Image (tube, rainbow, N blue to C red; front, side, top):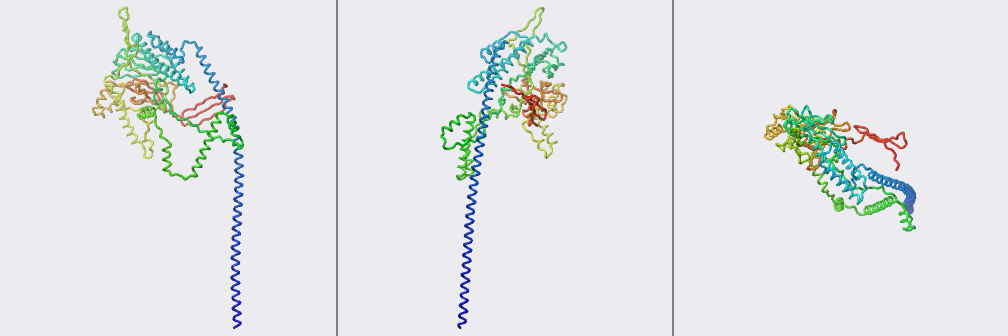
Length: 619
C-alpha cells in the first residue's frame, strides 16, 4: 500500500511540473510577440520620421529652386519689358512722325484737290461739282471721278490709321459722313456723264448698224454704252471687244427705244452697306501666364515691398496682380474642396444663377433674320472679287434734229438718265420665272442624285447651304427649255413646254414669249483668279445685301475664264469667292535670303504658292 502511494505522488509532481513549464513557454512567447510589435512600431515611427525629414528637405530644396527660377524669370521679364517699352516708344514716335509728315505733304501738295479732312474744302468741292450744269468733256469727267475715288480711299486710310479714343470717334463719324456724300455725288455724276455722252448719239452712230456704241475709260472705271436707234429686229446684240463684254436682246427690246449701259468699277459702293460686311467681334479676354512672385521675408516692411513693386514696368505690375488673383482663387478652391461636396443638381442651379444668359443684340438678330433666306450672301464667309458690273436699261435722251441749216435740240429737264421699265407688261415675271426655274432644277437634281447616289455614300445625297448658294453656278439647260419659243436666238429646245400643262405655267410661257430675259456674257480679266467656281450675286437696293436668286442659267467656263447668265434685273452684279477656299494651307516656311536683313515667307495651298519677302526697316 505504501509503495502505491509513493508512485501516485510522483505522478502528481510530474503533472504539476509540466503545467508550470507550459505557462512559462506561453508567457515568454507573449513577451516575445510584444517585444517584436514594439520594435516594429518604433521602426515604423523612425521610418515615418525619416520620411518626413526627407520630404521636408525636398520641399525646402524645391522652394529654393523655385525661388531661383522666379528670380531668373523676373530678371528676364524686366529686361524683356524694358526692351518692349523701348520698341513701343520707337514705334509710337515713328507713327507720330509719319502722320505729321503725311499731313505736311498733303498741305504742300498744291494740286488743286481738296483736303478731305477739312469740312469746308470737301463741302465746297461737292457743292460745286454737283451743281456744275455745264456739259463737261469725257476726259474731265473721268478726272473728277478718279479724284473722288482717291479722296474716298484717303479717308478710309485715315480711319484705319487712327487710334481709339473719344476724339477719334468724332473724327471717324465725320469722315464716314464725308465718304457717304462723296459716294452719292459720284453715282449722280456717273449718270450725268452717261447722259452727256448720249446727247449726241444720233451724230455718232455706227454706219453698218445705225446704232450708237461707246466704250472708253481707265482702270478705275470703264463705260460701255449701246443705244438702239435703228430699231432693227435683226440686230439683237452687240459685243464690246475692248472689255470682252457682249449681250443679246430678246425680241421686244430690239424694237424698243432705249440704251444699255454697263459700268465696270473697281470701287465697290454697295458691299459696306450690308449688315454682314463687318466681321464678328468677340470680347477681348487675354489669359496671361501667371508670373510667380518673389517671396519677401516677413521681417521686411510693407513699404519696402511696395517700393519694389512700384519700380516695375506697368505690364509686369498687371501680370503680378493677376497672379495674386489666381493664387487667391486656388486657395478658395482648396477651401471648397475641404467642405462637403454639393450635388450636381445644386452645381447646375448655382451656375444658372451666377452665369446670366447672353442676350442677342438687335443687330445680331437682324443678321440672323436676314440670313434665314438661303439666297442672301453672308459676306463674312464670301468675298467679292473683281470689278462690279453696273448693268442698266435707260431711256435715250432727246436727240438733236437738223432743220435746214439749223440744229434743234429739245432740252432734257432731267439732265440725267431715266430707267427704262422692263418687263413692262408683267412686273411679276422675274420672280415667277425664277420660281419655276428653281423648282424644276431642284426636281432634276433630286432625280439625278437618287439615280447615281451609292447607298454607302451619304455625301452625295446631303446638300448644305453652300451647295444651295453654289447651285446656280452649275450649268443646265432648264431655262432654255422654259423659254422655248420666246426667242429663237436663245434656245431651240421645246421639250419643257410640252410638260407644262397648268394655267399658271401657260401664263408664264406666254409672258416669257412676249418679254424674254437679257442674255449677258463677260470674259474675266487676266488679273482675276478663282480657286473654285465663283458665285454671281445681284445687289438688292431695298434690303441692302447681295442675293443669288433670280439670276437665270448662270454658267462659268474655267477654260475660257468667262461667265454667262440671263436676267430680268438691271442692277449691280459681282462675283464672290469663298474666303476659306484656300484653307487649310498645305505648309508654310520662312527661309533667310542672301542679304542679312531679309527673309522669304512662303505659303503653299492646293492652288498656288505665295512668296512674301520681308525686309528690316529702321525706324
